[in-house]
Image (cartoon, rainbow, N blue to C red; front, side, top):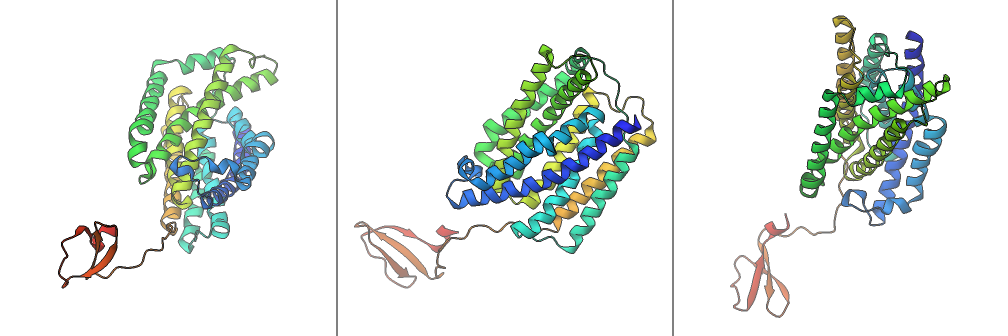
Length: 350
């Protein structure tokens, strides 16, 4: 059991390093795409034409997914419970924070180092007290866990939340409230991990001699995972393009990890048979990691907004629009002429 957790830990750490790197590359690609006039945050998909974004995708989905990164994370879920693997994603925040400092010019102050240390300490505590994986012998057993009433209620709740965020909140608040895009990513992400873990266990059992991959239920888990990953990717791109990476990373990590731990506790019963001290230690470790991400976030500069070439208007000047389309400035003490159509005060431009 300890050996499996150790394997999962090593794979998760390697995965986090590559995730953090690809996160910054994709952000850089989105910035270049935005300069061409097509922003993901505004519903555009111009970033698909940006080579640097594809380099980031190649790093995080192809090389990373097949060889190092996501494959390592995928295999980690075969050996270790989600409560161990998922919180280690904080290490990717450290990597992204350092790279963002140098590549994106998003300043990392000295207090940010404290946030990084807290993430490392919290991750260590989680590793030392993480529960062992329960033995599962077939996909049918995983299916029974997935269709239990408690988990079905969780799935129904997440679908309802996502529909509310996408259909109602996104058109109204998507460009101003960071929780809309990240909320969709995090809620869907918890289902992604559950389906990926189920598929990973099926592959592991197949490699051990008990063929499970060709099972119909394994195909269902694979389709759910693919759908969730595509949805996550779309809304994560929108969040990255609309808001500062320093804000997106910690909030996304906190929500995604919290919901994943809840989902895993419901479906796989990670806490079953664990002592109160072990559970408390893991929770303290997670709170420490969460505190580190918040400290790291609080020390970062907000993203600079695009400026426009508007000149500052004098508080004593109004702009008068005539019926013939001409515009002229009028001072407060000037007499208003009769042919005006509208007066635009300086406050109009605020």
